[in-house]
Length: 168
Image (cartoon, rainbow, N blue to C red):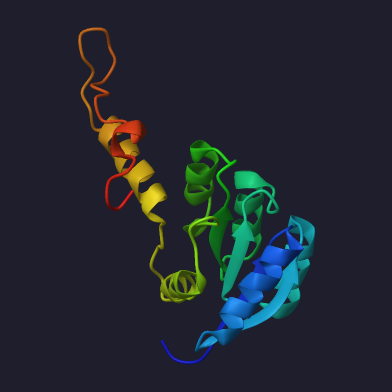
């Protein structure tokens, strides 16, 4: 991939927003084109600046519904979702189903990972935090299970089972 990757940041927390900007501005090949605090500001920013990537806090974006609206309005802008531990697994997975290209955990991310995630998504690949990758493996495993005698699948593998293992 040649040239710079343009990024817009959607985050309510001003301190984190400024930290993300500083990290990205230090990364080679990445340019921050603006910041927003909510979905409406983000849509205006995307409309005027046409960033390749929107680094979006899930809550500030309006949840999975907001991600879906942004993805539908601006299909050329790929969304990389940020979330804190307070959000639920289902909301993050739904955001991925509805248009997000990747995910980062706020508590676990650092400057190198944010830049890597932006570059990965800009190149057309998904970027998933180890936690979300584990959630997705669990979802696939559950959907592939055959119902037992009571009509339920074999749910021996759970998210709880994978915590603390490498890659989750």
